[in-house]
Length: 85
Length: 454
Image (cartoon, rainbow over the protein chains, first blue to last red):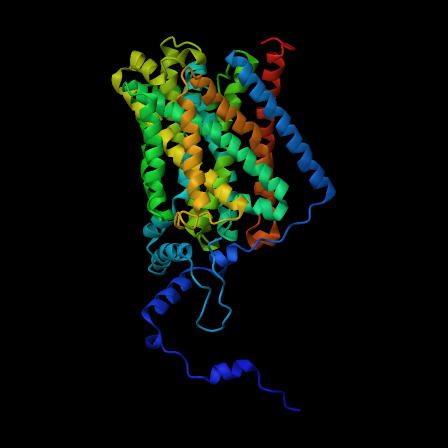
């Protein structure tokens, strides 16, 4: 049994668009698009990356580091204020 | 975001361009032309920027005062080789940022927020805003100290800083902003000139590379100098800035080799100019200089004028103005990048103020806020400058941990993920920075509450 021809073939059969058929603005934009990688476009970079799954020990380690850093920061700020007096 | 919907039509049509895309692709077309025509120097010229700016931006007012303080208190020994060692550490960190920015085309703030979670993203942005605000105050202080040498007041310092921020933002192009700031940053070499003008003993400079003598004095003062010197070399804003700037510049994995050159050149220049400030400061030691706080009133330029002549003082003063001005631009930019990335709106110098209102407002607003602080009379200038670096050092390990996590994330980085050797160095840097910052913070606190003696 013969499969139905895919839609893409219709597109291939249509006459190719020549460069001179494009308006100047379209040609300019096409050239610009070629200078950027696809994932550099604003529309691509505005899509969020999927969230990574952190293991429980990694999450615990991050929280411990965060708490430690906050405590030491408060110590530094206290000392700075104390030195002013 | 200013993004428009992508066209999904196959064939000729690609994504619809935003103004930001158009500006970036124009820059990229020049890079592609240089690469096609094998113009190596032209290619290097087009691709340098974020690395040099991050490194020379970090040779800011507080950093140069910290280096000069090291020299004034301890002389050349230990710190002359210590500064290049710190910039080697900075290179490792900044290379990772550049690589992540070039591969993902995203800033540090948005990657932490999206990949690790909003809580961590906002923590990172909070750390950055706090340290940036304190550091920006210190930058205006350094401009004020520099201008005071020429009998100009705090009002001029505020006006100069704010005019520069607005002027560099006015073009609406990343390229323009980068080139203006890059041109200004090269004047960081004034510190090298100041070092030459104090006529140092070249033999003593060469001999100091053996890390001796190890600094004496109280344990706490030594910790303060270590922590502030580390904070003068690697800071949270550099991480945010270089990654975001690399993405904003449009760097891709093809440009990573040049990004490494850019970062390495920046590190070498920053180390040389930093040693210049140290040598200039050391002139005060050999001429019977007093302790660190003794310089707070007159300022280093005035002190240098007394021991090495008016030219050395003037050059050091001009250096402080330059260092403060460049850092105001880069640190404000890093704050603006972080604000835009965390809120999820347009954050690019290639966007117009209308489409990236928060980015532009944060850039100017944070500088304006810091500027108002230095107008307060009787502010402890040197103390703010040194403590800005210490606070940055204390908060840095968290930023570094996330940076190493992102650089190891194969889902994001693919083949560009960290190698084992890079991880080993990165983890060593984090441990070293964390220990120095924590040791100073804890020791100072215990002294402040009189649990231990000084």
